[in-house]
Image (cartoon, rainbow, N blue to C red; front, side, top):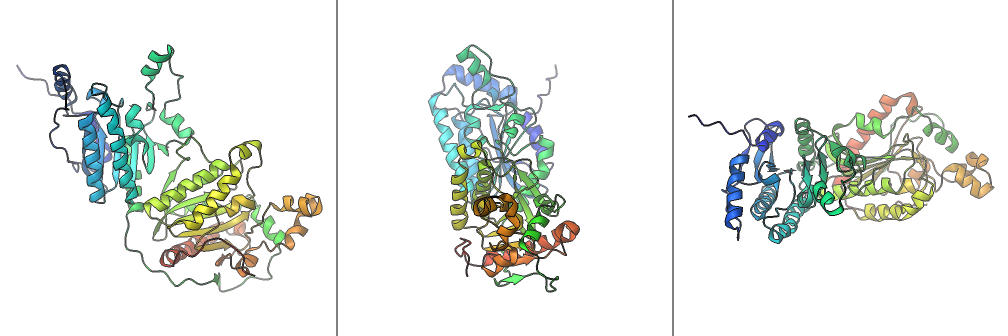
Length: 494
C-alpha cells in the first residue's frame, strides 16, 4: 500500500515566496532533545516532527533576494504552534551570530505562539539570549528586517519579533504579547477584537507596513541595497556656496519670501521623495505613536543611501511631540546603520495644544537638538520653505545646511512674533523685515552653506526646483561624509 506524500512545511512555501527560487541553504544541524525532556514530551516532539515536516519549530539558513545574500530565521508554526524551546532558541542565536560574522542582513520571520510551555523557565529565559544576539547584529551596523506572520504572540513577539530595524506584518495577522486564549482564561471574557491585528499595529505606529510574503521581496531588495556599505567617494572640499552662478533680480523682501512659501502648490518633501530612488517608507515611532506631519524613510539621493526625516507642511496637523520622536527614530537608524541623515525642514510651526504640552513637545525639541549635535553620522539639512519656531530648529543642526531661495527661519511664526512685538498679528510683515529670517540672511550669518535658487518661485517651476534641490543634495551628502564632524549648533556668526 502506497504511503501518502507528506505535505511540504509551511515555512518552505514562505521561503519560496520571499527568496530567489532554489537559493535557500540550511544552516541547521539535526535538532537534539531538550535537556530534562520526559518520555511524554519526547513522544510529543516525535509527533510534531512528523506533522510539521521539520525537526524543530525554527529553521535557519542563507538565501538570495534578487541575487543578494541574506540570513533567514523562519518559524514553522506546524511544529507545536511554532513555540520556542531551548533548541529552537539556540538555532536563532547561532544564526544571528553567524549572520553578524558574515556581515549579512538578517530576516526574522516569526509565526509562533511564544515560549514552549513544556520546557518552562529554561525556554522562557532564552528570550534574553535571543534579544542580546539580535541586538548585537544591529549594533554591528547590520539591518534586521522583521516580518511578523500569523500568528506571532508571547515571547516570540517580545524578543526577536520586536527588534527589527524595520518591521512589517502579514495582512490580517494576529500579533500581540498576550495570547487571546490566555486572556480569556484569566479574565473570563474574550480579548477586545481588532486590537491584535497587523492593521491596528500599523495604525498605531508599531509596524512600518502590512505586506504579504509575495510583496516582501522587492522591499527586502531595497533595504539590502540601501544598507550595503561601499567605500565612500570623497566629495569636494567643504565651502560656503550660493547657487546658481547666475543671480536673479533684486533680493525679495522677507514677507515676499514668506508669502511664497505658503503657496499650496509649492513643492514639498513628498515631491523630493518622488524624485528619489529605492525609497522604503517607515511608519511611526515603534512605541505606539504615529507622526502627523513628518515622513521617515530609507532612500537614495544621487549615489548616497541615507535616512531621510522630512516635515510635510501640507499635513492636516502641525508638528507635535510624536513627530519629533519619529525624527529621533530616524537619527537612531542613521547612527545604527551608519548612513547619512538628511532632514527636510518645512513647517509653519509646532502644534499649539494641551496635547502637545502634555506630550512633552518642548523636551522633544531639546532632545532632537542635543542628539543631532552629537550624531556620529553625517547630517545634511534642507530648509525647504517654512521654518517656524522650535519645530523647525529641531531638525536644523547639520554638517551642511541648504536653503531654498525663499526659505526662512524665525523663532515664532511671523504672526506670533508680531503679536508679541506690536500686540497685533497684522504687523507680521513689518516684524520679520528686521529679524534677518531670509535664506540670504542665514547665509551671511554662517548658518546656511548653500542656497538653491527659485526662478523666480519654486511653485512656478516645481519640476526644475525639485531637480535642482536633489542635485544639490547629491553633491552635499558626500561633502558632509568626507568632512569632520564640526559642532552642529547653528549659531549665527555676526
